[in-house]
Image (cartoon, rainbow, N blue to C red; front, side, top):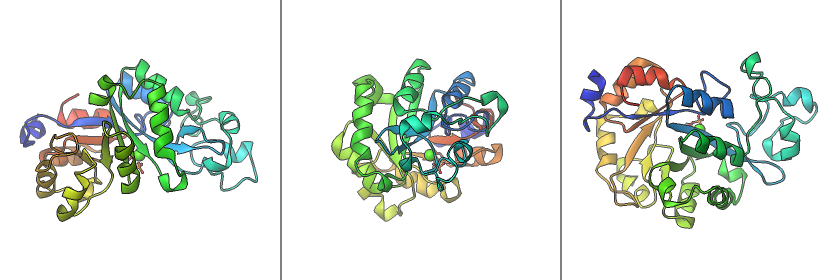
Length: 269
Ligand code: G3P
Ligand code: CA
């Protein structure tokens, strides 16, 4: 495609299905990663949070209100924060109906069930530690869980897992605890600050509106902790024109709710 030819590295960016294929199925559910799988997407993105009883679950917001029927099931427990509910309570919630009647009965997945499905679909995972400041210790717990489901073995580490966060401290902690895991920082440090991030990040992942050719080149000019040039994955791009633009700037990945739209615009798989 024209965009792919325009990319300095000569191949189209990787398209990552954001929160699963979130335009086509309720975000961060098993249905959403299955939708991505059916569209042929190997990479999915998710968000990890923690329940009152310390279980890791997949949900974007720190509150259950937007994407479940928690207000009906547990009236009076506003603001319905994940951290105020046990897993048993959360398992009673419907995380699909808000999106469409045919998704009734979808649940907020545990990290364990989610990883089972990713593995079953033979997909790869860009995992976000969301709001880690709310959940002290979540970096270690996430790594423990990933180890127990077999995702810290060398094949998975090599090309099926990246852990990212808006919290530089959380990314640093993941790198310190488990240096073999690839990591990403969700933000756009200044070019002068990039070398500091390159000590513990493999990816720099900024919002698409700030990406420039110069910035991409500065990111690519540094080697990360695994001695490979840093990558840049940008978010959240759902329209073809923006996808073509950022592909032309040389980004390595595009994170999208409509991954099929991005793939149609920029090529690749
Ligand atoms: O993967 C990047 C993107 O997910 C960051 O924003 O709010 O959708 O988690 P958000
Ligand atoms: Ca996210």
